[in-house]
Length: 153
Image (cartoon, rainbow, N blue to C red; front, top):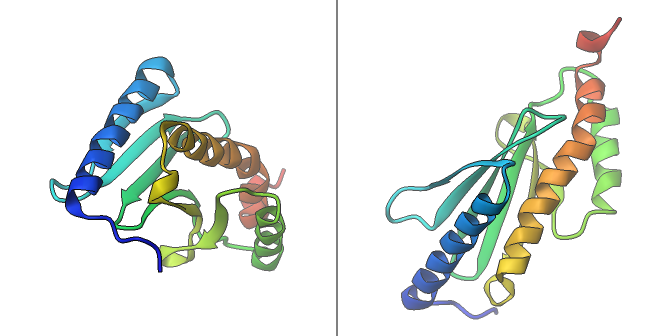
């Protein structure tokens, strides 16, 4: 089983992640806000302005073994569900460090996790960039599949 990290190590990594995120926000105007979970949570919300999707928020949660991350992509499709799910499963094959999944209320999410020893500033930057760019790339096509009648001419 992987190593279970104690409170001092988690607290140190928590501070580092907060510093890294603040640095990203100061250098990149796409990042609109970085918020924290409740006082006893090791959780961050990174809200970014998009082009294809108006906003993308990446949630990151630090546990005792992993950093979990996710972003909401779109609600449950109203139509063409089989086509949409197949499309997303095929995209999963090409993704590194993330995968599409079905979440609360059958909505589409993009998720992943990283073992604590691999959490570095470069990896956190890659995670945020991967989730953001993937959503920007796929959103126009999948929203048109799942809500086709709303886009009919």
